[in-house]
Length: 620
Image (cartoon, rainbow, N blue to C red; front, side, top):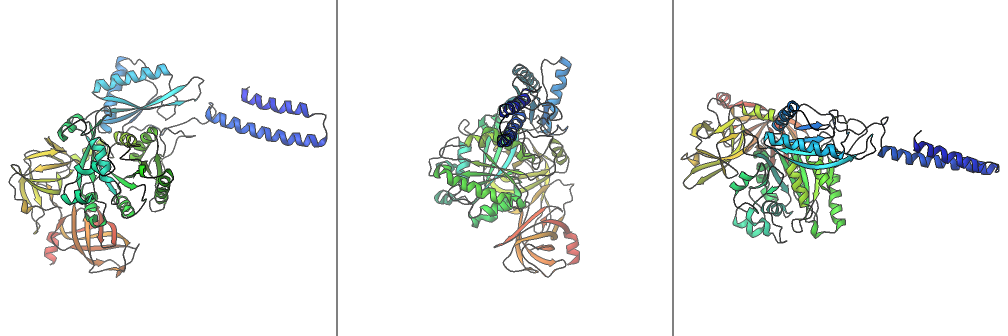
């Protein structure tokens, strides 16, 4: 008989014996006391059994292992045979390929997700085998965390979570783009300066000076243009930034993972620049910076809404906690939690207060909506039923450095959104490069910056660029390529870079153009239709109204030509609207996300139909 059960029965019988021979009132009191004691002890036993589950209870689980993806479960890896070892190394190569250079191994976990755990000796032997496997495939391993499980065992048993990282053979480093949003004076540029320079701020904005591009930005302390900063991590997870490396080239050489920060403007008068940065540069994630002492003010809600409208996964950083009391920081966090839980957002806030939280947040954030907890056990295997996605919240200071390490851990573990299969499908398509920036560099000539949307681009490749004002494309040659200020021979789909075009006339180029393969037949249009939702408008939205339309890297004023089935639109209403560009035709694709604005008027939608230029000219 279980000792806890015998304790219960023993307590009841002893009480019954001592209470015999007393009066009826005493008997009634004894019965009540016995019930109370049994209930109380029953609760204790229930709690104990929850902490030490037996085989009859539901054991703790992780989500079952899937064949695709970069997460692998292993019960143990103790002294494998040579044949088994070769098989394990091949399996690790597959997981690394799926994660584009990163894989996560859960040691002490069965394939169905059951957390069995290993003894100390078996765990050490398994980690040694895992390290040998990593050496064979040219990777490094980092133990992210270890957890004790006490399922079906008297001695302590552990599970370990291990990050395996390797620079893929076909690329220089794994690159993630993070757009930085937030209200003016929330500390965005200062935070990036601290992360990339490796030195804390002095409280007066010293850390942000290297990020500014214009004199008026230094004078006012406010970002008005889009700037880029890089933060690297080597294969062991150590930070590589300007504190150790003097140039961007050295950072790129040392890093196996690169975080590219897109620093956007916070002031409302630069909103068009911020929207262009979000739509054009295709960020993987967005970081919303909120000042702890001011809370949710100014453009904070607007930036949050923009990121959600464009379906960019967003996490939140509460800055300047050194200026506030603990109560004020908690009040700001509660404000954020209330907004995130609203029906329009439908997010699950996750306040990160430890390294363990940062690891869980990074893994679950990129996989959202999946499972809210990774190693936090549940009573049965969870079912993926489209739960709300999580939103990590960090509270930190750029002056004292409080909790800054948690944000670095988060960036180090944050996996890419797309897997290798999606990447390969994009690379097999024809080349399409979106032009976002245009420069003239002495001794180099015309240089364009942007993102390769699909295909592969090599040095010396012949492409065509357009559309011009009359809808034509012109031939050009790619002379050289640079990624993060270091030379690159081949550019692959999803990567951002600058391309040197030699003596190509800069006046023929503009933002919003595309460079495509000559064999591609791009659809150029003046007129297009989109299914839209009017988010806000002071009066009514009707035919003849002019708005600034953002579709990818395209930003141009368009006129509302017609509303299908309606004469006018009010806030919150949906409709299919036909737009016409007023200046020059553009290259668009059906299904592209659309965002339009004019003053306080804002709306989102999706391109549903294009009227090609030839049809438009014939109709005219």
